[in-house]
Length: 221
Ligand SMILES: [Fe+2]
Ligand SMILES: [Fe+2]
Figure 1 (cartoon, rainbow, N blue to C red):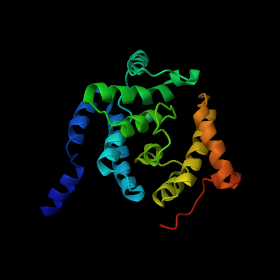
Figure 2: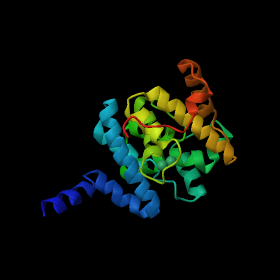
Figure 3: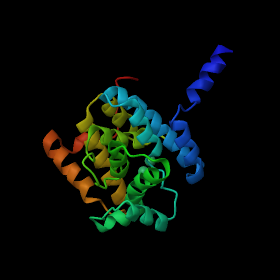
Figure 4: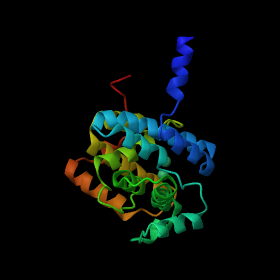
């Protein structure tokens, strides 16, 4: 009986996140909502690794894709209402646009005013709208987006061990490198901030192409 109670309580979402979760049920598809809860949980874990505020980290994780299932026109309107000036044409592509649109939506509809959270949500697709775009908090949201439970993908365990091991710059470089590969494969335009982050980290860490090898034996296995 106790075991049943404990497993149920672990699934519950604590306030005020439960209110945000109820809102998301109206704007997200069930798979996207499930992904968002997964990102929230990973953010909660990364908060412990990187000494982030647990509540703020979980909030950003849960809300990061709030506008992603809305029509493109609505996303553009949300970005406009938030006063976002697009710096690059690619930022109108849904892959990038949904992030600032999500920040605008949760600001309007849920009264979120915390710049750390809003900037991280905007910046999770590399659209830079504020001073917090490349903070540890924002990088953790990008990691959590790829590390939330999903179909396993090649390299996921390596990124997880690197991010959870506190090696933020290495994790950031892996993520940038693999995202660039993925976007090129899918013919998605590359955001200049993604390329700039990749170049800066590649030079700073002094790595070569073998750094991005996806086959990997985890020391934790
Ligand atoms: Fe997203
Ligand atoms: Fe996401």
